[in-house]
Length: 93
Image 1 (cartoon, rainbow, N blue to C red):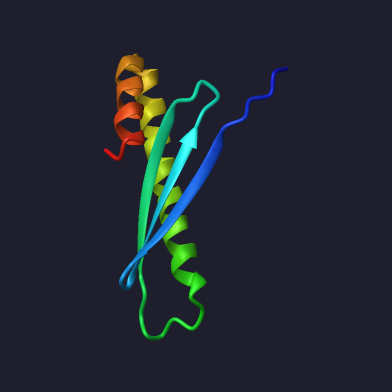
Image 2: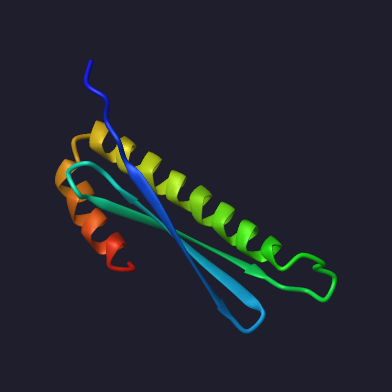
């Protein structure tokens, strides 16, 4: 059995009181799908990393929804649309 490996990179940036995360999945054929997430810092946040964790988790959830939607589309025979969507999503669409 052949093992496959896909990689996910998470990029985190802060803009004022908001933390933004972008999770990018790269498949072995170098296709990319990306998900995004945002968290807002409040004065009650005792640990600064909480925003990173929330934003990253939300980006991963979004990524999961996008991959599942692409799989459903593929199952309906839309593989050309999958390839086009991956390119647009990888560029920030």
